[in-house]
Image (cartoon, rainbow, N blue to C red; front, side, top):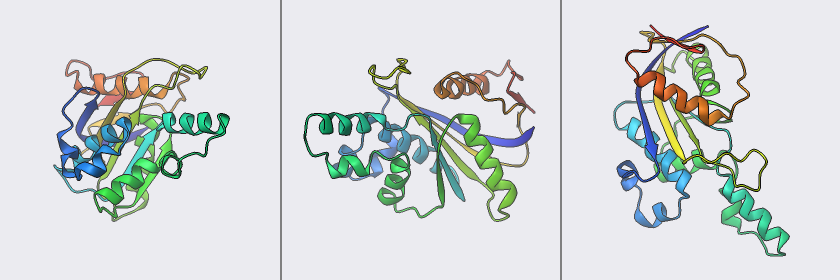
Length: 206
């Protein structure tokens, strides 16, 4: 059981006006993938409100569309784009944020779920005395239908500021859920914004 303080939870969705990333120069912004735009917008929107000591980026699938494009190029005897390759790795969006925003805040990129991100944030807060606030950013988009795990859902990003006190959330269970990670993130957003719900199998408000 872990006690955390969650604040400034926000979602960036496909079709929304992504106003936070307008700070990124237009030429660089146009080169970002749709998923990267959502993730950076959500992160930057939260960072407009408060200071952060560490950033945890987490996604189950990452920018998998870029990896698939590389594989398709290889299968058709074409040379993969170096730019496409360099931005296909799982920590690419974290790196793009630090470069485009010139922010040297230490960061971790995880392949996992929202709860995995909460655990990672909690670990840094408990073990690093100078870390008072951690930005947690979750982002995902559906895999292509060529994958057996394909499940259609709109791409989204969700971020929040995580600290230790005063605690307002208890992570009650770290049981590994076999469901796709994006469902857990969406479930947390629904739980947190439902003022009539104070407890679930995984989380409790305090």
